[in-house]
Length: 365
Image (cartoon, rainbow, N blue to C red):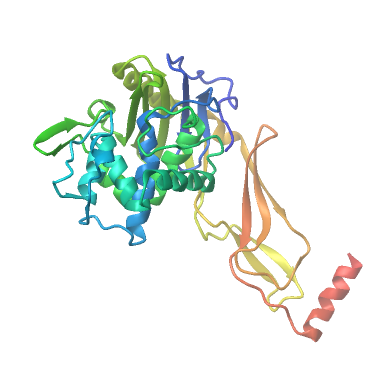
């Protein structure tokens, strides 16, 4: 996605953050508002569990797991080091309880149990994680486990983590809303708070996940929705739990103060009508396949211009959804975004005699 931080010289620069890397992304458009060392390889720690949750949600969606299904707790999961939800091998635990324990309590034991429940082993689950990362476009990520425990071959970047967070909210919005804003959870008579301090400090924040190891530092991915805009912040390598929260808050406040996301075209909206040659219809409507947003500094919208670039001549047959052109957005002569135009409907080829007039017109052009 296009970076935006250099578009408007008159707005304040992003805040200076005391972290190893950060990124601020608009959820709707995917545009990066601000970043530092966004492609630098880092240790994800428990931010790994966002991918573990993504695959667990996907397994539930496709009927491979059920929320009330009881999963066995292996000795490996029970003995996994680090944060725990305190499951026990001889005590039944459901998928839903494990999801709460992993997302809210950051339980490594819950993560391993879910991984085994989905894939049969944590090793096979790590393979699934890597395949899903590739599908999502996380080109600088490699997973070795479901927990985020340190491994030299277990790594990611701020940019890839933002892609993953965006995908989970987009693909599993109900599960995200149900789980990621919960402030505490009790299991086995042990109550643990959600470590995401922003859930208490900012009412607009509704998730996502914290992470910490000695080598990774204190990390936080946060998502905040204000009015119709949602931003995702990634802060990596802060010096303390308090600092990861304050630095994330600075980043989110900066984005909402100076930038705005606007819905330009709705999915299936007719944007323009293009001439079709040799078809049963003389025209076809151009549209977009999903809602299209532009994220820009608030002061820049008045200077944005849009232009249509059509693939001419358009000759039937044309399939519904076929690319037929582009909409190009420019700011002060610089291209800031392009969006594919597709055919809203199919246009079948005309009969032999119906094609003759357009054949002649094309010859004369």
